Length: 410
Length: 185
Image (cartoon, rainbow over the protein chains, first blue to last red):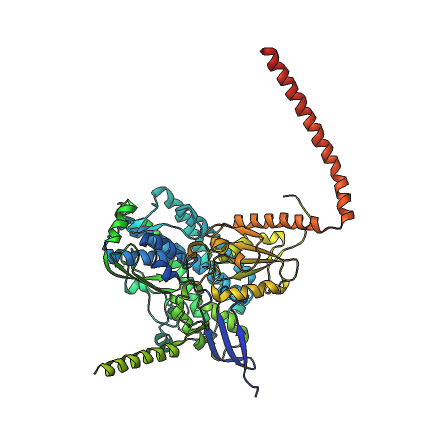
């Protein structure tokens, strides 16, 4: 028997796109225990948001993450609208839906390429990036930007999608459907990819429930869970979305990397369908509830209330909480990204995995560290970040202190 | 672009994320993949700073990553260049008043080329590489031994003659023009 040794991964590592720190305990080639420490990409966005007014924060919320920028802007704007009681016209809802789905398309295509890259199929990465550029072209055609679209405003959308533009969207959808067939062929029929993904990084249904996994990671483990289906928002209620499960293709659910891949591939096709239906059903009407930004701003200044919004981002359920309290600035803003849940499932998936499977398993949950790193609590000037137990102890000490004070008064 | 000595050699690039939002990082990947294909110029991502000529840094520098960025820079062999992609990395961007960012990678390591934009387009990143080559050329010119530099200057004299000739022509034209004007008066 070998002795256990430690291996560190990150925060700067070519297998990771973003800074995060993993700490593995390994015997021979097997991973026994995994520990992770996020917090390298924490920029204090929520604290910044509490210094600015809601319209400025909308701009900031797009910069939480470059890949799911629309999801954050969508969720934040809906939370603010809920807090201030602003109604959004129906046409704006449809346009918002189209952008959300386009984002899911490019995110999943990019992910499929990255997974193939981790396995060693560089040609699939390059094919994926080529297909993705077509989505980026369409996004640029519709919004004017490639990454942060700036389409959302509080109370509606900034840009219309008129009938002249529908033809190009339809053409692109045909292209994505063809790309989907090709991806499906590569990922399901290729022997090497199957060998590297089947039975790797298994997350059982029970574990997924316990760890509150969300999005494709949960669906890959067989949880019938999709925010668009369960708490429909925007135009999803009219369209009727159903959660995609891997059993539709393979007939069984294993909860491994392959199942998560199948879910994402199915969602590529589903997104294309949703966009097509949105175009067909798009109602007429105005784009914003109030065209003048100054009027909206003054209304938000005088608003008081709380708003919660949840969105099915490409990686899972995204949650924003906003409180307005008759102030110039946002009183409280809290964003909870899907990677926060999914990353907790990584140590479970890593159990008994080989060292060579580590990048594949990390990639399989599609981690977005920029979304994840929201809060870190630092102890004094030591630079040491506090974990759950430290915080619990701190909490207990505070109650003890209050108890002493109370007893002193008596 | 003129084919220079530095252009003939491949630039190996190491990508460092110092708290970026993924926007710039994905645009860098897009730059290197088929549509824009910067790899045809020999620009290639490498896995370790010890093999790299250029460090591409993205994102406002978070306090956690500041030390790591410095260490990565120190691991690179000379001659080394730093390119900073995105508004956040250049100045701090929207996160300028955050408690956890330092605002700009140039506060930690020297930067050679800045690429503004949130995020910059792949074309802008390729343009930045062109600028970097120009900068490398100038540096190479300065570091060349004096003898060789003199020889190079001798070759340049041919160009100087041309400029002289041109200026003579211009002078002639101007004298003719002034003559005409005076005649008209």
